[in-house]
Length: 332
Image 1 (tube, one colour):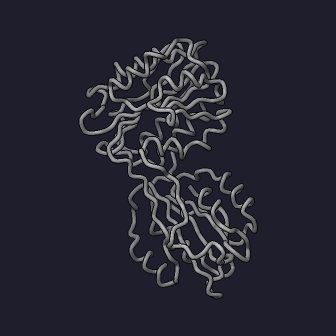
Image 2 (cartoon, helix red, strand yellow; image 1 turned 90 degrees about the vertical axis):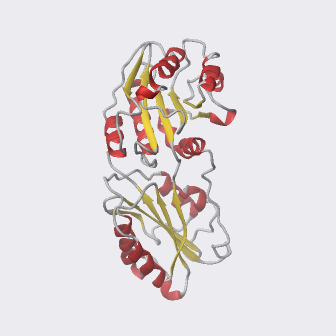
Image 3 (cartoon, rainbow, N blue to C red; image 1 turned 90 degrees about the horizontal axis):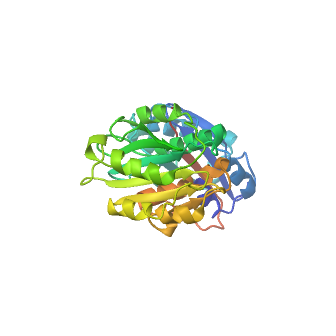
C-alpha cells in the first residue's frame, strides 16, 4: 500500500518528502523525511521494510513519538516554512492504549490525518494449505511461513472474527492446527513460527484438498458455515502429481473460496482449476518473491481492492508537502 501511494507522489527534497515508522509495543523509525531525495530511493527503502515485531498495538504511543520526533526541523520537517504535513496510519487492529489525546495534539500541530487504513475482513475462516514436499525445500518453507505471518499480522484474529488454520501436504496431508485450535493472533503466529517441512517426494494436491474438505471444513474443526465465509489459500512450488480438475468443483460445492499461489515451478493450469476465479491465481518467480503479492492475496481475501489513491484531501501533486506513514507490526 505504501509503495502505491509513493508511486503517485512527486518525491523530492524540495517537493514531497516521505518518512515511515513501524510500531507495535513501541515505535521504530524506518527513515526520516530528509533521508531520501528521489522516488526510486523511497520505493527501494519501502520494498526492504520488514516487520520489526511486537505483542501489542500501542497506537497512541506511536502517534506521540511521531509528533515529537518526525515533525521537527532536525528530522526534515518544513512545518516552520508552512509546508503541509500529512499522516497516514496503517493498522490492523484496535489500539491497546488511548489515541484521542495524541490525535488531537497532532491536529493542533497542524498535522492532517489523510486516512486511517484498517483491515476488517468481517467473519472469515481462512485455511492455508502449504506444499511441504521436497521440491519446496527448507528455504521455501521458511518463505511460505514468513508470508503467512505477514498476512496474519494484518488480520483481526479472534474466535468471533477471523479464524485461521494451516494444513501441510506432500505425499500425505497433515493438519498443523485447525480453525478452532487458537483463539487469538499471538497464538496463531506462534504456531506458524513452529512450522517445519514434512517432506515427501510428491505433491499430491488433490488428496490434500480432499483432506481439508473432509477434516477441516466441518463444525467440529471450527468452521462456521452459516456465520462466516470460507477461504482456502494454496501455496505451492511444484505441479501436483495428481490431476486436480475435480478439486475446483468440490471446493465450490462446499462454498470454499480458493486462492492459488504458486512459484514459477507450479502448474498455472492446475492453479486455475482450483481457484475460484482467474483473479485468484497468483504466481511469483520464486518463494523469496512472495512478499510482492501479499497485498493481492489480502485483497482477494477481503473481496475489495486494497489500492490507495491520492484524493482531494491532498493538495495538488505539484505542491510541496510531507507525508509520514505509521505502519502496524506485531511479533511472533
